[in-house]
Amino acid sequence: MIKNIIFDFGDIFIDLDKPATANEFQKLGLKTPIEETSIIDQAFEVGNISIENFIQQYQTFLPNTTEQQIINAWNSIIKEFPIKRLDFIKQLQIDNNYRLFLLSNTNDLHIEYIKKHVTFYNDFKNCFEQFYLSQQIGLRKPNADIYQFVLDMNKLKPSETLFIDDTKANTDTAAKLGLKTWNLIPGKDDVTELFNLKEDLF
Image 1 (cartoon, rainbow, N blue to C red):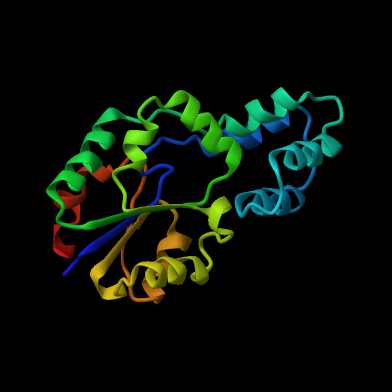
Image 2 (image 1 turned 45 degrees about the horizontal axis):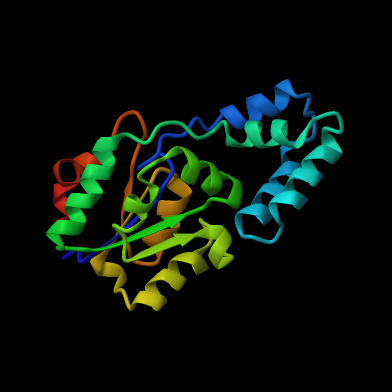
């Protein structure tokens, strides 16, 4: 029986254009292998480097770009947050049938952008018992330790916990720890249809 639901953020609640960032950096002239920039990106996601340091590291590859150009390219991934998804999670909180958690790989620039452009961000955040962002807890998916952290901190039983994420590697790791999972496919599935599409889990 599901008693707890852990939600991802991007492409679960807020729409993402995942190729956009690489495309925008390419337009700026970035030719660095993705392996090199991935090291920077992942360090930023777990809070190991500041916004300033993140921008400076990208400017070493793109010396003729401004800070704002780097920021704009980085944030180009973020799209709309459909209001129906806010209504969905607010109703779940009101119904109070499940403990609700958010667990997201993100970073300070993306969260700053969302706070500025999503007027109901605080209302959304307040729907969750805990709101875990990778850069704040120093852990990131799909590493097993981030799921264990959430389970341990909140005394959750994996068999009673559903984890929803759009990235298969993330749901695969969670499943290995005994959590129920839904690998939601953006554009095909919508989190608002949870109880219709995944009624077998409940």
